[in-house]
Image (cartoon, rainbow, N blue to C red):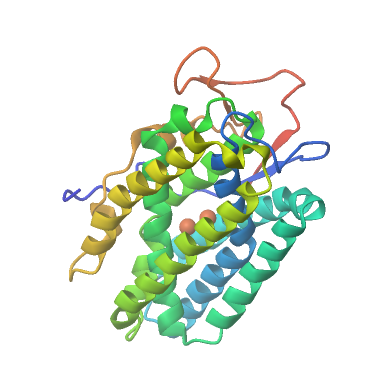
Length: 303
Ligand SMILES: [Fe+2]
Ligand SMILES: [Fe+2]
């Protein structure tokens, strides 16, 4: 964790569009509905959280002392986050249409970020940097248990979440750099980290439990034990990094990237406009370059 390792891939815009027509975005994880419920809570928050991050980074570019290289890198961050929240918005559409609980969570997520938008640019920039740290830790946690979490899931939905997490690794340090370029933002980081952590984790817990409460599996103690175990394992990943991130001289490039996701993104082929779908068929972490008609509706559009 102490060595400096910028992301293996230069951040690149990949506008992946998923067709959810006729797909069950509520029950996409048949094997682990409790995991699917928590992931869906996160998905419901993204169309509110990521536009806020984008707005704060843009405001930071206007108010801070950013050189041309940082402006270019921040533009890629904005494009990646835009692609993420639009993909989640599409995913969420049938979710909120079929579930009043999901619709209420969607409204609540919007309300939270409308309140945060009333705060200053320095706070918002610090929030964006902290949000990216939590996102990076989420990717690190997910990669450590890739097969455990995603085996048995709908391949397309798994691909949405993993593509998003993989790009969070790729742009892990950019919001932090924009924060440092602003004269007053870094001072707000400790408070913003607490708020970001409480917002993201709190919403995931409340939203995930609300969504899981509608499932017939809700009375299965094994599923609850698994949820608690995941909570502890995530805390084990995020707490040391979050604590380290408050120290003077910290930079996200000091965090070692999990290797598989970076490798997966290199499988993106702009020539054929294909992206490998996550699949656990045939072994752990196996990737298949799929060309058959059953998956061509996972359309990939090069930037
Ligand atoms: Fe994102
Ligand atoms: Fe991000």
